[in-house]
Image 1 (spheres, helix red, strand yellow):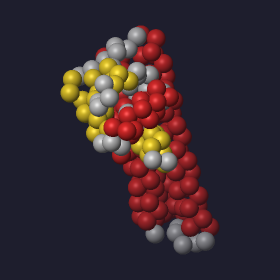
Image 2: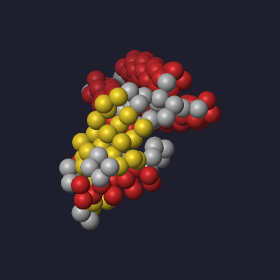
Image 3: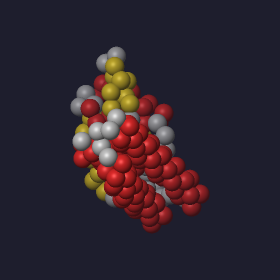
Length: 185
């Protein structure tokens, strides 16, 4: 029973770390990456869908992203979506393909992006602490219902805390790596 609670909490913590990694892929560094633009919402055919569902995204050079729409009639909608997005890139189109040049980051922009990464890492830490709180509540309910002993409760509580500490360390590691990538780019 205790193992079920800890397993469930660990799964959720793993998903939190994975969500942070995925979220930080969209934060621009000095290098081109399809992840920067693939989630931009594009309005085409009367519906809104991510850019990667309307076009092929490639990185032919370290500082260039190319977007080749599957249907050239929506190239204008894709350009408009990229301009409206917060990635800070200007689309350059020849009617068949859109080129996005990745400029070097200024020191000020690097600091802003670093703050954004720190904010997202802190949000992930808060999510992990909330999961720990939920796990503790489940464990204390089990103890109150006398389905586990007091000793088992305290052992499980220690395991939950060490689990939380290890996932907070993973989150910090992901954030530190992304900040280093931003500063070096």
